[in-house]
Image 1 (tube, rainbow, N blue to C red):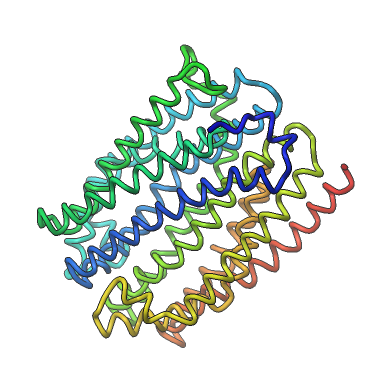
Image 2 (cartoon, rainbow, N blue to C red):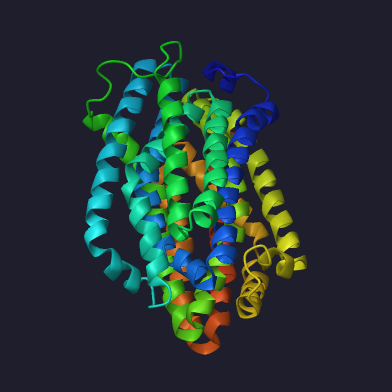
Length: 447
């Protein structure tokens, strides 16, 4: 089903947000679930060192995602604004430039990482126990990096072009194929973590083919046509300037995970790193739901901002914030009440379970605030003001979290690592609230 771009400026806000956000949420949750399923299979089928090895790949995965979001998020926002301005020619040119940029960045990233993969993983905190698993996983992921970039970039375009359900179906297909192939490759073929990586790449390749077929149809508002693939400096500049915020967020996340892994290795060893791998999967499930809300909000805000319908911009942003807080509050209650049960999905190892439960209790201490902080930051990205979004993302990661990770572990060891995260979340949410309230008041004056 297509939700036509014109409906973004006329349909009831709650209905629109549901139409756009629910498919995105389903897709994001499904994507998170297959990562969880992979970890479950690896944890029970390979062992705790494999889970720790997988956790060591997070910085590199975040860095790859940074380059993907640099193009995908920037392009999807630009497409929404162009559609709001009825500039369909430029919207199609953005699509062509996205394809070209994803190929360039995807190839370059893999070529730069392959020769130095072992050195990078040791720098991230690998040991002799964990590096074989991390190396095996990342070699295959890097082989399919171009596919991953194109898959995420084109899905963002499809959603912004008025096809949120199509974007959801593509993601669900990827998840379904991954969940079917992962146990076959891990257990049936005995490939271990290599099986999980191959399942991911194959699933995304199949979904990419479906995306290309959809965008090749000439009846869509945004579709492939001749002359759109040549890079245009003004479009590339617009894409990269808007995408710079999520790029820096993911790049900073890479640095943060490195700091976390190094501190955990020093004070808790490979088991503590494995615990972080488990906790990260759980946290990411709820974060992905809020990201789905953000993805649903983004085309609505972008279109109405481009059409100068500022009252609708304020309404959809406020509604999304309440939904985001609700999601993270629910996540806090579940994880605080049933941490042992949740960790039991991933491992039966007593030492790893104990370390994971301790981390969950601390990390989820102020997690409800994360829902607000994520949506409020995304608001500025959706209206094409990347500098504010960059500032808000950097305050949490670099001004608050990084210093805590450098100081607190020296006094409280692994507890210092876990407690750094809720402290940074709290302070960053206060800063975001001050800036966001001022922006909403400015919108109110424009009504």
